[in-house]
Length: 599
Image (spheres, helix red, strand yellow):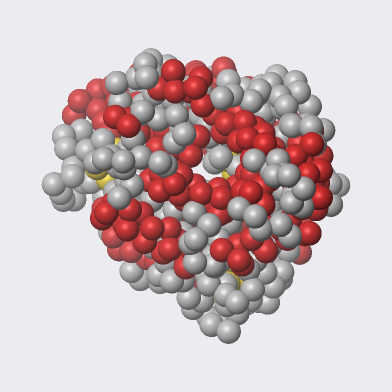
């Protein structure tokens, strides 16, 4: 259970003070580290899709009535669920509509539920048949399966004789949603044929097992570990609901363990479910990397010469976080997921920056010839993961590790290959730049995230003594990225693809900070926008990150904000208001509370 550290009365939030002076910023960072250390789950917004799928597959889970009310509250006036573009709202709307239809199919008609389903179906029928869906996890499996499921559930509402509820008869007669964004309904038999062609279910498919459960041959059914299957509440609930018998079925101890994992997740997130849980590994790595880049973390053997360092022990905390994450095959973003290049690269960067033993060779299995696959068997490459890999490989240890552990291996072979790998990786990243100057990535809806990651990586790697002649393509790419950021900045200094956000404004600033030439005016306007929002009692970060649907890792976003404000002040680009203070900030932690939150 997550508990606020500074404002225990504000249930569901984590108190965080936000002064702008150097020493205060360091305390702000240290306070965030303490809060994250106290929570093994991770701070992440609840998911309409995951919550709906759990409710549909496992309605008997405690808190079901409150979850149903929360789902109904999340529907927009146009009938859609979710946030972001219409395409991003397709999967949440399908999931919520299917959950509510499942509720009605059990003979539990409610006028509010019927109205919500009617609105959801109308919105789904208005979805464009053509166009590209967002590059979210398993969208090509989840959408066709849910379109079919919605149609099947509507068929179950056929009244028997004259006893049917009039509203249910109307729903049964309603036209079924069809192809949306190029994804047509697909019967389970088509997926079953595909599954019979594979000797074993790839680990990456566990995360979206709810799309496979109805068609998965018994020999391929996965066995959940001590936590959620594939780190996914929806996948775990679908595994529990599968009609299987024998040793692979959800019976006995395995079933009790899976139910306990769902119950524990619901308790942590106020009765709701996030896209992935627990997400502490990813959260901690991204926060440490942000603070390390900004100089808010230091090597243990470096002296404290400025007041802008976290309290003593922060680096030891970082080492304690890092040690259990590193395995022989790399680092996992969450239990139940496969090791991936993104989290592995972040762990290597943090270890190198803190002077801890590390082996760049952990990235070698992910090398695909000119870039790193985010995970083995990946379909589409990740821009941000490769930017993180470039940052990690270009950082390297500033001196040999002071000690060795059982998880560290020889780095001699890695050292011989790092140079050519960095050269090829830098070339691949610059070649992926879009004509307008930005980069896009499958792990985030906003191009500002991917562009800031690549720009920061290219800028960190360049040699100031040889720049720009040493890497002219990277130099040009940084200029083009900065030009794109300048064109897309809003008049108030903010950035945002669907409206201004603090998170995307932070990334816009990072792009300009990486530019070969200074851009003082735009940076100053962005800083003014950010500081105007520092006094928000509850900072709300709209979901922009990609999993199956959109989510926000709120503590990670707060860390990026702290780090960027610190960098601006430390470089002398904005006035440093040492000694001033703002109203306390609170990170939405989604701890248990009487009233469920609005996503």
